Amino acid sequence: MKATIKTQGKQFSVSEGDILIVDRYPKTEAGSTVEINEVLAAGEGENFKVGTPFLTGASVKAKVLENKRGKKVIVFKKKKRKGMERKRGHRQELSVIKIESITA
Image 1 (cartoon, rainbow, N blue to C red):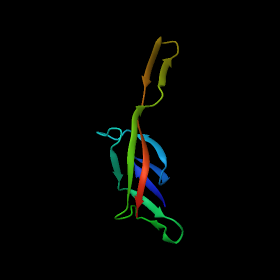
Image 2 (cartoon, rainbow, N blue to C red):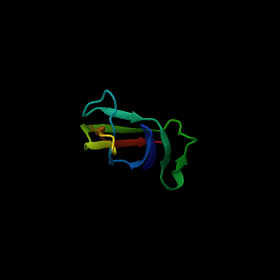
Image 3 (cartoon, helix red, strand yellow):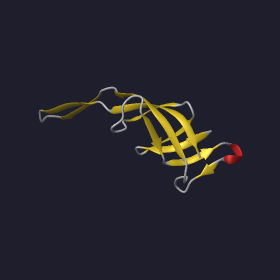
């Protein structure tokens, strides 16, 4: 079964067993289970359903495999002829999740 979910402001098309890298889920550790209730569409073939905007009673359960940090992004700003330079770095907090079950 396939589903389209919305989590943390982003949409993903998933099926059971998929591994996703999403923004960090707050207060979760590796091995914990996350339930996503914002399911936009789910099913296959004749049983495909589309929500308005979400399907009622549908949910996706996912297991957090690990919490990690992404690659470092360098933000460099400079104003020519003013002597102003600023260099900052940022690493995004990420969660790696595995889709375990989809109920529609």
